[in-house]
Length: 462
Image (cartoon, one colour):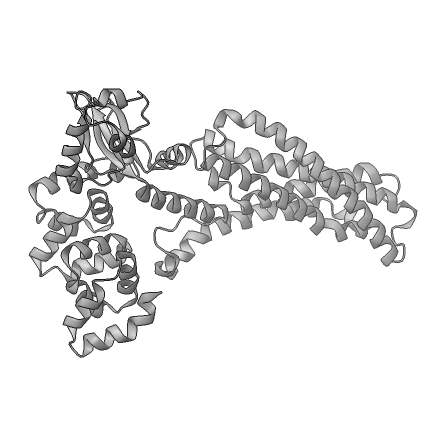
């Protein structure tokens, strides 16, 4: 990385006051490279470097910084009202809204007062939408034209106002009331005859989002239609703004991170792992661990209930880990597959019956395969133990084989259905974390194992 390679030299130039050469050296860097550099520098050096950047480059770099670094720079620039005002006014509305969401209330209120009236109005409007809604992500910087215009008029309009648009890839068509009618690719406009009416380029098909929709809905739509920007409308179809793919990628990353944390029985972290205080890390993890610990008491209760059987046939205890791990693993597999399929929109709530049938067949097939292996392991164990299973080792093998079929089938069914149940109750499907599924299957697996053993071995070894 360039920032890491030049960091000592940059700090030396700061210490020696060679800021003129440093300014020229940094002007050829890209905003992502500068953001990496600023995040690595000490706070006192960071603000020095940031002050050296040209206005436009500083704004673009600021948008790539982590939120905690942005907040620190805001504090460091608090005394430079004009510079801070120009920085905040130049930020794209969606990035400025994201920054204001992270700031303490009094700080956000103070910064609102230094915005220009137009930018303050935009910011307050975006902040007025529900948290995690599309309205918080959208930007009002877009190009909209009328269907009775010609291509030449559209091109003239783009040349005049295009610099203010978030993207030039798509131009939107609205009617006299501002209602979204269609969208046009810039490629189609450039290749059309200048005298062609916009109406002749329209196909009548436009994909849009509602400002009140959950922001994760944008992830699914972008993925399905492979677009770089999506228009955002109100309930009446009036075009309010657009959402670009870079903002949606951030949402997708946050959602995937949250789901992974929940799958591991950890409450979602609001900050990066290394920035999360130790007390918060403990608090986010201990609740689930306590629940799982209590649930494991049921496992101990099942073992205690079948204590007499275990005392008579100690051979059965050898295979308890095999039974438990098989059930837990199969359940975790099914839960992970279903949760991910739900997250990307491959399956919906009303697909539960299809998933149930697929997982039942999968569970029986997987259980049969593992059951055969389990019987073989019983035979190997019998040989290695010198025949302590007596003449009934084949019955023990049948017990292990059938138990594996039952436990693995139960695991796939439980793991695949828990997400549907949680979603039906309005909870996050990812909350059916793999540790929770595994713990449930520890109890159910032991009950299945000992029930099968009692039925098969009664009158012989029991």
